[in-house]
Length: 196
Image (cartoon, rainbow, N blue to C red; front, top):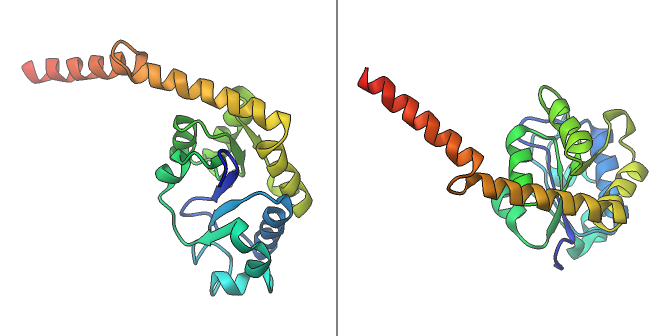
């Protein structure tokens, strides 16, 4: 796939979608015409028996090679792949960090807990993602949001900002960077406790 053309979709290991949201997500992905990799755990849909059973009839055939639906994916490796240009996430903290570290802008679909705060930072403070609200999960909104992120000017701006954040993070890890210095300070403090 072309650079930055694939949308990676993964809502974590705990989130359970209702059937309507699952169907709207499937059609929104299809209608966007973007290549995608969608992680669908066997237990990720209410009352699910199998991924194939939950999808609309003929969906996999209609999607063809443009989309892949898998039960699991190595997220850090997927986000690091040059073809991945967007990440639709539940905004768990680990997923948020992994996305920013790899310079991948996000579509935020928070569900509970800290995910709402994380999504707010991603969309309104850092401005490296777009949010789909739970009460607005229609195939049209999903399609439009995917296109904004992946091919429209707004998505280009989000990608540029997340790449700037990635660079800042990399600098903080280097010798003399803020994260590097903070870790060294913690180590020195812990070593001082051992001497006591």
